[in-house]
Amino acid sequence: MARRKTKTRIKHTISLETREQIRQLSLMNNSFMNLALEDNIPCVEEMLRVILGKPDLVVKTARTQKMSQGFKRSIYLDIYAEDSKGTRYNIEIQQSNEGADPRRARFHMGMIDVHSLKAGQDFKELPECYVIFITQEDVLKRGRTIYTIHKYIDEDLEAFDDGSHTIYINGAAHDDGTELWKLIHDLHCTNAEDMYFPRLSARVQYLKEDDEGMAEVSNYFEELQAKAAMEAEKKAKETIALKFLELDKLTLEEIAKCSGLTLKRVQVLAKTL
Image (cartoon, rainbow, N blue to C red):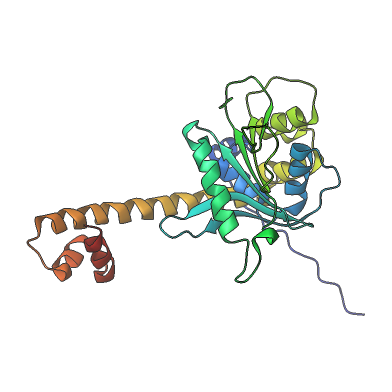
């Protein structure tokens, strides 16, 4: 009889400093949240059921850092999900008041809508859409745990239902005994054992206490740092190129050579001037 092969558990060496940094993370950290919920339908489902008060909601797809391409500006959606009825959801973690501006919610809604219909589809087929901001502070400053925003007709205050819904969740809300407050509590938790919701707790425990999970976190943040460094270097090169373009004393080829950019990128920058 053939001997069954056993999966070898890979050992990871995580420094004490890195372990401590990981222990201090919570789901209110945008990057940690993205890692924890990437393709994690059960956790996203658990969150949406609490936020919307729909215990039977079934999530079909869940992604993080989904790029939505626009005509002049693109955005990355922190968490993008669709349920069994086709409703779209965008959950954003915002640690600064500026990041939760109402017009940003409008922009996110528009970007999702643009990609929700195929050519020839009737506008009536545009799916329901929720943009949900979970904020570090009480951005709307009314002392509520949750703010659900819909459109109304001014003249008679009747609802104007276009299928769009904006929700702000106050991450600084006090304990009001609700399931939503328990979710807010869990998002701030740095210790998985103190969390209320089992799916989120299990995921956080794996990423913060298991060696393989911690290695996943460490690698993810290293990749983010490398990407940020590359973006900073690219921006510095573009700044140099723009200064040369403003002087108008060198050819585009010479500017490309001096700045370290490609000729094609320099040509694009030249058009902006």
